[in-house]
Length: 563
Image (cartoon, helix red, strand yellow):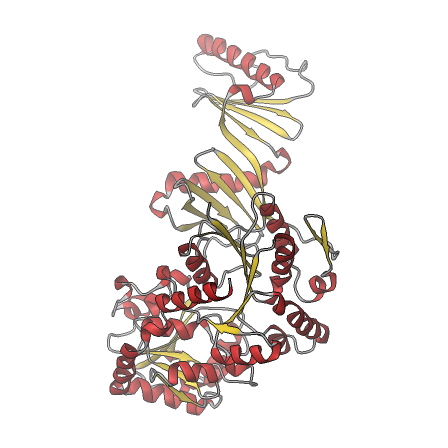
């Protein structure tokens, strides 16, 4: 019997780093389940089969049911209506439009609300009982049950969108297609069955039609719980203030508890502090081994993002001191961070870099020298720098916008991604940069990312350190540029990036906090094909160091040592 590994994260859009650990644990013989936050977005990458979102599923309609599943009174109404309709058609050459035409007095069935809609060659019978409604359609001689008649109109909008997608847009099967304001997508489930999803981006819910069991479900997020003590298997745990101030993990915990009724984990991996209380509770209740993977040093990150929220910073620092020592294996994203956290908590923190998994690695079909012309009409031979990732604050994107003022006419900056800072970036670009030299792809799914990266001449890491902790940052794009063997431009204040890119001679450092230096260095590199070729050639000596197989071996060694 295989061992069970549970991975827990507060992410809704799951960091690809977490998939690396899931992949390696699977390859090591574990049966993997990943518990993230809820996320309803059909335009993003689909979840792997092992992802278990904190959602409630409610069947609102069941299709093609057998007669014996129909309530007796409903079955009687339908059977009598069928008989009367056949008699009516023999005499009139068509089906009756309503109960009046077939002279069917349904007042004796007072507990039911029945409707007959006739359309010459076929008819539909609806028989309601409470919140349930049985439907019979004569053209296919099939029954279905609707379990939520109060919201029939709301459900119908999504049901109709799925039906339209299935019948009229089969060329989009496997991808997302928009029908009005509803996105529809088909995916194969773990059994290879086609499953259809429909979602309005304005709502935290979606609908699902399963072609195997012929059910139509509404999927909603598990609601947040009260700020009370948590209970698992009869044992109480006090994290009330933590949930109120640091992170409310209650929907994720509820989902984990549901799974705990089915199986018990042998190993629990937690990504970052927010959901670590769940990991420590599971360890105490089940005796499982516990791994913490610190993408951030949480209380120091809170100082950057929530500098005025003193209590959040205090609690984050307090719980990091309390919970990290309870973990069997502590991992983080870089050597500098590992060294400082090891000293602080008097416990070894190991380094695993955020490499690309096999699924996300560069593929031959990603190379396309005409991609920029096809997307933006950029003439062949132009020099391309890319920034890829989420556009948020604290990333020195304001100076990236200003730096474009110094680019030559044969040079472009492509922004691969989007985010809340995009509007401000465009304002700065318009007023202080050169919008003619910049193009935007919009948000790009992780699976599509490499086809942009590998076709660029230069990858930009604009981050500039605001303090010692920030200088330890290891953004995902560092390893993405490594995977694509793209020469890099980075800020000399970023210690981990300087060590990884600078010491391996695959990038050039400069003071990117100064937009003039930033822009002129970007221009200089794009104008020097010899330098770009030299940096790219240097990847031959080091690229495997940060790729999947090497990082996989390092993690396997850590499992042997600590778990």
